[in-house]
Image 1: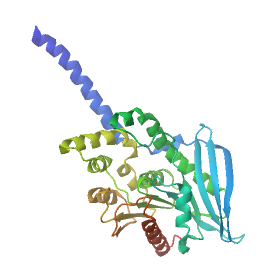
Image 2 (image 1 turned 90 degrees about the horizontal axis):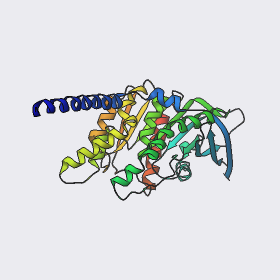
Image 3 (image 1 turned 180 degrees about the vertical axis):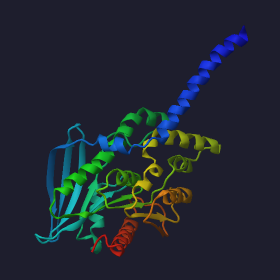
Image 4 (image 1 turned 90 degrees about the vertical axis):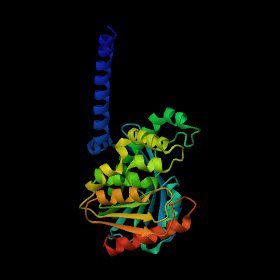
Length: 313
């Protein structure tokens, strides 16, 4: 009798577990490109405020609202050029530094001063520091929504820049650093109006990246937490998207002494990418908001690579 009851219990449980595993595998492997494309609506409200004017350029703060009631904030620097001149555009996605600060710093580089620069603030207004994993899980729905909303936000700024007659549409590029590198790769795969993609201090294999940056004992805890974290944000795994950037140029810039992005993650991403691709190694640690000197060095490297490949003059 006990064996019969056990079989009656075990069989449904095994079926449920099997179905759950199949659902999880499908969730992880699913291609979200069309989902991201369909998540984009239409811009219904535009507010632009001029915040700085000098002899060479204007700097504006821009707010866009879409028909899904999502609001996005950007900063745009436009060089003062001749009326009949068209120039390249560069969209910047940094870590957690404000877009305005990034633009001001990048604009110091002479090679970039005749390029339209646009930066985006991440559409997350919630809590950014959490006491523990439970508190993070409580805020997970709003964090995930902000992650998803970032991709249409990038597409909206492209829509907006396309309205500018000064923009050379064949020379619109996307650069992402650190946290921004992940979104750069996804957006580059989703929107083909982006003509080249540059990933700085990024990598692939989110589960491994997460476990690498944890320090619990025993080590298995880090691997389990990394795997769980990767499952929660599976739609944002760069390895899913990077090969979709080809045949457009793809550049990776990484630090040899990066304490956050391990070599394995860097090489997995690079090997997954299609041609043309290139990787440049710098003798640096990870890019941080306080490392302005490194940001300038990185900008020089990006500008020189773009000039070498005919992306800017």
